[in-house]
Amino acid sequence: MSKKIYVGNLPWSATDSSIRDLFARHGEVISARVITDRDTGRSRGFGFVEMDSEAADSAIKALNGTNLDGRPLRVNEAEERQRGGGGGGGGRQQRGGW
Image (tube, rainbow, N blue to C red; front, side):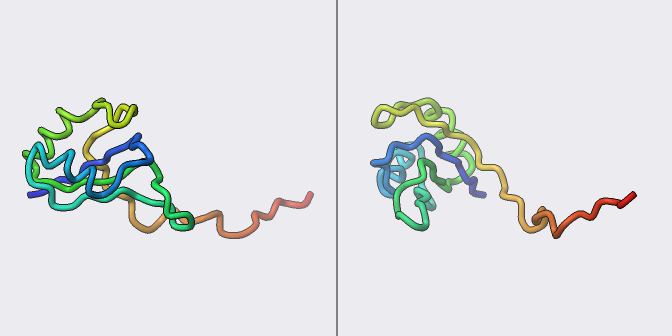
């Protein structure tokens, strides 16, 4: 079974392959992706790595707080994203008159 890892506080220089290489020291990396801004293509400063569960636990322990290009990484298990629901306010609220 695999685990998804959140990697935060990435330096702007980080790439998919650089975080893949960093995590590969702790086991097989299934996927590695730096999240980029849709409009500019620049890194948003975080990414996700997917690894085998045991390797992921080892990587989280070893790499959380590790300095990468002058920035201490935040590495932890990714939380499952909430799907659907939650929408907006849905129109104007009318207030009672008198």
